[in-house]
Amino acid sequence: MALRDKIRASQLWKSVFRHPAPVDRRNRVAVMLGNLVLHLHPVALPAHAVRLQFTWCMGGITFFLFLVEVVTGALLMFYYRPTVEWAYNDMLALRGAVSFGVLRELHRWGAHAMVITVWLHMLRVFLTGSYKPPREFNWVIGVTLLVLTLLLSFTGYLLPWDQLSVWAVTVGSNMAQSVPLVGHQGPLHQVLTIDGAEMITPSSDARYALLGARSVGEEALNRFYVLHCVAIPLVAGFLMALHFWRIRKDGGISGPL
Amino acid sequence: MFKRKRHGRPATAANRRSVLRAMFGSAIGLGFTAMGAAGALWAAVAGRYMLPNVVVQPPSRFKVGFPRDYPPGCVETKYKERFGVWIVHGVYRGRRQVYALRTACTHLGCITLWQENERQFKCPCHGSGFHPDGINFEGPAPRPLERYAVRLADDGQLEVDTGRLFQEELGQWDDPASFMVL
Image 1 (tube, rainbow over the protein chains, first blue to last red):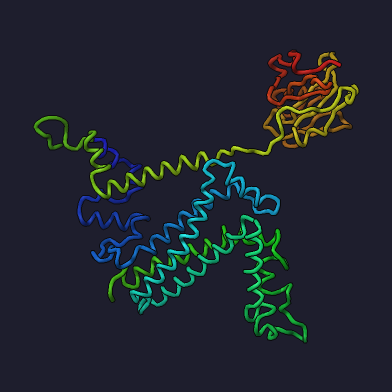
Image 2 (image 1 turned 30 degrees about the vertical axis):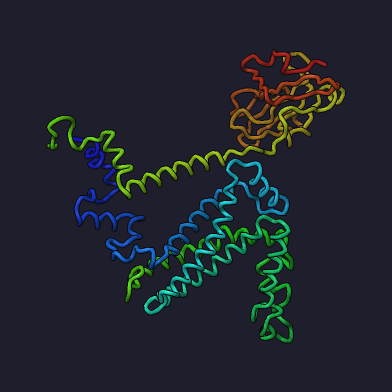
């Protein structure tokens, strides 16, 4: 018996791969359906679905860049400490003292590229009318993902903790003061007044919740770090899974309906 | 069982040509080969990345003051926090000497405590006890505390070198580099 057949017949192999080799049509389907990675793709595709003119591959490139950001970001976390004392120094160390510290630049370039590709993806979806029924809710999910991408960039911008970071986030988070209802300078915040006492003040509004303080400091750095590394990626990852799943359920990729 | 070519090996057996063809002979083969190469490269880069080039650690050689700072019976604890060492002016086998004891317990490496009233080193993890000379007398520790090298520097100060260890049970405490006679 050839070695390959011996391996295929072993209990170890069969406990991992539940189906025979993809030697005929039926088993090729079984392989596609029984494999976590492969099942993300349909068993069969119309030929036009893989044409670059139809999709620009922008959604796929955006997802690929997200994976690049996850891998490089996780590696950066091994050296970066989100404290006022260390954040800037650790960033400099990644640039000057750590082998392959270029991972930090990869993370930054990947973030820029992701913002560009996610916009191009949206443009393509608009131009091809792919937001029309029954895909309209997937457009809504996509817009949410666009906002989350921008928020990831915004929260990541504070982490190097240089002058640019601090003042950019000071300006950016000041916008939260003007949110309707929950920003203390925003419209309708007077609505939330109990017995003449305003509930929305500089120490209790949306900006205060975002920064954990009344100005950008140690607390804000820690909050943005957790938002950037844990909270937003988790939500975005869930919505991406939903987004991809709905492409299949709403009629497949780039097909006319 | 196998279709045999007229000459040579069974058709199913892998040879150099078939492996190369599988790796580079088709678009999908080329794709998987490139993916594997990229993965290997990433693993190598990440492995090197995880080894820091700059670490914030105290130097392995440091000065601990002049011999007159250490009267007989003295156990100096102020170098424990930063350097992990006690400077002791004690008696070992009837000989009066100054030595640098490593603070790590010889059982599982917890950092021991100096108890001035009982005049003993005590491990907080499993209760091992050591006399001021470093010899273990209770608990699970199998051997005495370890010594670091000490010497008199040019300016007359004592200098400890944590790069060299001396173990009592190996007879290394007789090495003159492991103690100072004042």
